[in-house]
Amino acid sequence: MSALISITDLNKSYGSKKVLSGVNLSLKAGQIVGLVGPNGAGKTTCLQAVLGLTDYEGDISVLGHHPRKDRVVMLKDVAYIADVAILPKWLKVSQALSYMNDIHENFDLEKAQAFLAKTNIANNDKVKALSKGMVAQLHLALILAIDAKVLILDEPTLGLDILTRRQFYTHLLEDFYTEDKCIVVTTHQIEEIEHILTDVAFIQQGKIVLAQSTDDIKERFKLVSVTNEQVPQADKLQPLFKNSMMGLTTMLFDSQDKETLQGLGKVTVPSLADVFVGVMNKETC
Image 1 (cartoon, rainbow, N blue to C red):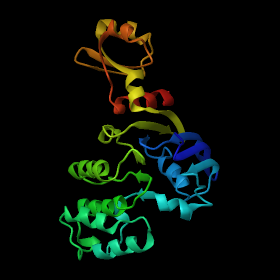
Image 2: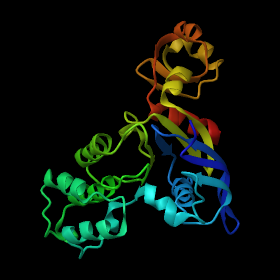
Image 3: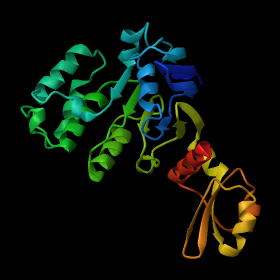
Image 4: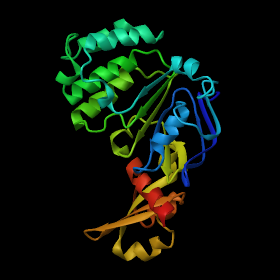
């Protein structure tokens, strides 16, 4: 299956500061990819390059198009959500719908209206009168009504309460995602979205340090609860991290034999958040 987004040797600098270094990613239809890293790791800059919002060195193809040279054509099949606060405060809901209907040929006005009908948002409401959660719902309605093949989300739920964040991702799966589309979402709070991800790419200081499917990660990494007596033996296997509490030490291992680990203690599948912490610790050591 050919990639919807192909990134090869992507580099980006601001003056003498290099913010992206040799990034390689291949994203296909059906994937929901988490681009995960700490603040300042290069997540947003990477997405800006993919969207044609900044110049770069390297090669990027989005649906067969060059993001800078073919941006107008490319954006017919690409939707983007950043901070939901970008909607103008004076804008009425009806105006937002009309504007999107006029400028985007793949916008489905009826779909957006049907989505909003399930909320407490009225056509005459202005953005300034809406809560943060309602603004998020409006923004989501506008984007999900675009029949796009690629959806890019840059920290889309930043500043929202936990209930609204969960509703956001539920609607994303129910009202947009199909197996012929690709979703890319950046976050530094992977625990909130790991249940929807098919793949992850961890980025640290502008470099991709891990890019793998979530299924493969579950097979590759193991979390082991080790007694104090077994810690010296377990340390020889070079855990990515360890955390001691109440007489037990929890250790994360990469690509170690499961039977060997079972001899040290209880073996469980780590969360993506655990793997992220372990990989980041390894990269900064």
